[in-house]
Length: 281
Image (cartoon, rainbow, N blue to C red; front, side):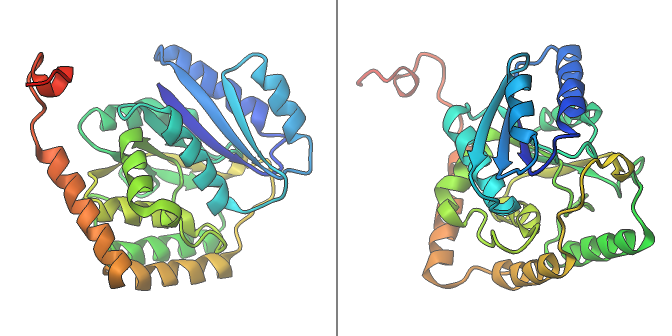
């Protein structure tokens, strides 16, 4: 099963074309899927449009009465999916404003099948790019990604700030078990959670890869929700917090992460063995 997580805040114009594109791509690859939309207190016609779309497409809606911000919205969606998904299922997080084209999903799934647990789309990989961003936003984004590359190096990874990613559901489930409510800790600091999730998965030793894509900011159908100053502050705090493990909580995280790594290294029991069937020895 593929779970597609869409955070939505006043996206009445983008929902119909995006859901239709997702349906076409999922049909082409014959994939079972469910769209999980977290409506973060929208004040426009988003809720009604989602009800109508739900009559024709597999959509589950989580509603916030008030706008809580991207961090809490993504956390709530991830927690719901972690409860209902199998470990081998896939979680794809996209923006809901039609800037992330669903046609890149097959490439992301192919990368996951190579053994990666996180696959991010990348403007900076060969073949990637961005359309519709002014020089200031392009410059800030490039500088931020280079800073994060130095602070949290991942071999072969150059895109740290794009939220269009695919995850193994089992990794998300383990992250929530280890970090709990601090899986996305700086929830009130803009779009910081996009980087924070990547840092936490890196701490867990997840294999992280990227595929090229073109960000279509020229297709954006709603106003930008990014507050650059708040997001910048949040990212700087993240660098200080997570360059090393801190205090007793950090030591607990480290122990549980090592236990996870050990569990993943252990070979699976042979078919029909007591460990697999649950029979007493």
